[in-house]
Image 1 (cartoon, rainbow, N blue to C red):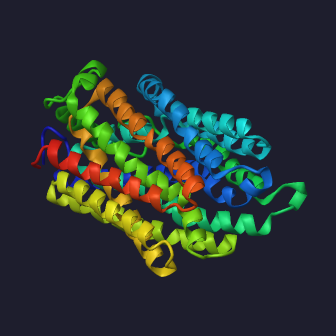
Image 2: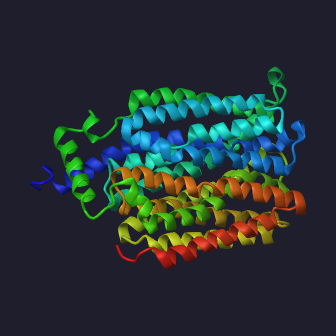
Length: 428
């Protein structure tokens, strides 16, 4: 029996599993909804651009301007979470992004398209880093790559389920009730988010001490383990975080990683259409393939990183694979089978990088520094979500192909590999 934790090590391990089973599926469900509402514009594009006479460049700017609002409100949202708690913050975010997604039904002009996408970013800002911060209230650093990996499967799960659902809605709902299929897409996929936001208030505990499904010894053991770890040479204030060069290196790495994620999220339907696949439902089903492979890679990379205690190479190799996959996608764009295989390889690398990456800043930040530092890294990194879709849209308008844009994003993924190898410390 361990005196400082009040329960045996095996019992503490069982407690962490209990926490994971209670929190992770619900958080995954929330982020699946967020991700679908963020990227379903990629499927709406297949018909919306023709209906509204928008160019590829207008779409690229509208898809990416989400991340400007996201950038501006990311840090304030996470600092507010640290002050008022996760339950109120995540509920507010989820309800507002659902309502804003539904408002896309009323898009008629480029200006309204840009405005609603901007506010979608404003209202969703803080959700992802908020959950990353929230998980640090429950799990020690040694378990975070695995836990982050489980949570971040929501990226991939959203791609797996979101594509077929979007394809089904787009293929079946056109003209129903005088709405276009893309309008039904935004409406039907926004309603569940509003309902889920209400569920957050009823289901989500703030911290271990508020979890009625944990016994008092379990609450104390988890709390003491985290308290001991948080006093172990970590940066605790927001000023400390901003002065730490590693925060800015992490932000640069994350910018490069997110450029790839935004590319496959917003442009996979168009890439699949360009390689010769016809029909909205077929495009939706095939677009699930890269994300399914990415889900498996994400979970495996997080588990393997935790078991080995190694972060640096697990992240660098993933971004290198992403770079190679994107280059091959552009090179084989005229061959449906090879291009799809290359796109799947890119998705494997991109998604596998996420859980390991987020275990790196959490290892040297705590308290207000964690709230602000994680949000700062995420907000700067997610500016790539603006830059990549806009750049690809502009290049496609100019050249008629997405290949040149894919090569540029591949170069960013390779930059992430170099930055990680040069600046992230070795060791367990």
